[in-house]
Image (cartoon, rainbow, N blue to C red; front, side):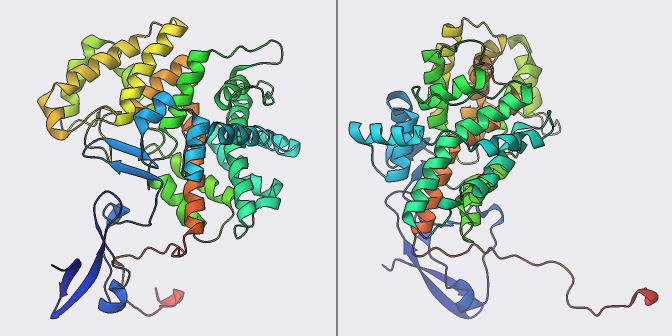
Length: 427
């Protein structure tokens, strides 16, 4: 039996090779479709289109599986660290103790920002959204670190990759500090990647900041869980920008801009706001009925996922992490009780079971970040911080791909056909 796919168009039959990956669905290679048939495929949102070949992340939405370089996300979140996962995504294999030490040392030596770049923040309004600041500052990195923007040079690519991963916590913390009118806190390279970020965010020069190890571990897990997620909207944006030969700083700035959208990076903020609207567990049945009503605009945020049609494997880790954080901080938050009760009722409701609307990672991460002390405006910033390593790894993979071409989607044109210009005095 042939491994080719057959297409019949009019009176002609065409064959296209079927390509298999190491795991997951086969794909039909239609690169020659337009040349042979004069037709394009029509796939809004590219939901049935493989835009690239990648060895980084694999998702099986039906089974609730997420693998980074083959390793299950649950194992990485529970047993690894964000620095180790970063090394894995960038290099393909888990590091030895010596390799991890050298990598962490390298990252820690790139955490500071050029001092002139720090003055860049003062050009923003005091009440500027931190994501607006992130877009601008990350895009400006290429003006300060132009010694590592030659994408044809592997050494330049490596240096810029390390710089982006290392400087993102400093950039994110400074965005927060600027929004609350506090002085910037410079990095402390004796701390871990995540501990350093916490200190730069919540520490002040007037007193010593003590990193809470439970909070540090919880935030490190959140970073791991958001490190990469296959060809989502922001990752595809990074790859599309990179396909033109744009420098890596510009590509990551493009990814941040895409992530800012509420349908992508803002989901955990939306979930937290929904829980605040519900308020107390006794009000949940009313809101569940509203969610079922197709004529009611209310939706249960933090349930369901574009890809996962099963329980989001990241949500399992988040549920246990939330308990650890609340216990350590001695927090009694009615939102958490409401979240637990909502999850329980939704998971046992035939409507949600039939629709496969299971809690996702955003359902819990917002509660944890709020308990730690982050305002909702910082939620997407933290997402961008964590996802940077995935974006960088995807960008590096794309640049190294000999089959890579500049992105150029086609369209189904539905506008006017050719017509003659009519001068203004005759209109």
